[in-house]
Length: 118
Image (cartoon, rainbow, N blue to C red; front, side, top):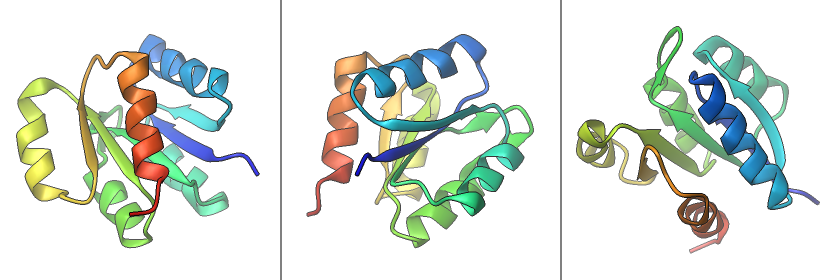
């Protein structure tokens, strides 16, 4: 069964690039969602196997969604600006934190590691 990845990214081109990268690697993609409300609704309809979240979305911060998914044992990759990554890593030690922009090979490696049980 294919792995479903939720993508929450409000930068149009970045969001579609991320989705293309995941689809080309054989993943099912939900998104890109530019806002928290759309991303949360998508999670309620069908829980993703992994979520890639930009922290600053069109309608606010995705921190609450990140915590909710982590509480449900959904692996989360936080995709953010370099200035935010240290604070995010401290707040969400179970999440993976990547700096934007992230090369596709690095992104796919992070996805693979996040999906591999410890």
